[in-house]
Image (cartoon, rainbow, N blue to C red):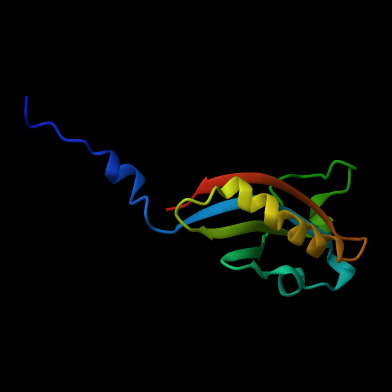
Length: 125
């Protein structure tokens, strides 16, 4: 059967082009009465082609936090760290480089701000 072809390039795309990769995913929250705009404070470019995105959520995807605080009492944001990764660059190594920069931003927030962030390392597209 000479009609068979290799379709793998259709699944993975070109390997010589930059690709979007989600490095981190998680949540950031604060009490409703805190009067904070975390999207303005935290969002933006962390390093070249690495962006921290915060999107306010209508409600948390859970009813309570680990300490028993009702999630309805908090403003909750979805946090995404997105990178445009050049060919040949390992996203995991890039994350090691930029994670301290993200941590510094989060640590600069008031004590009433909480977060849960996890490594993701998924290509988008």
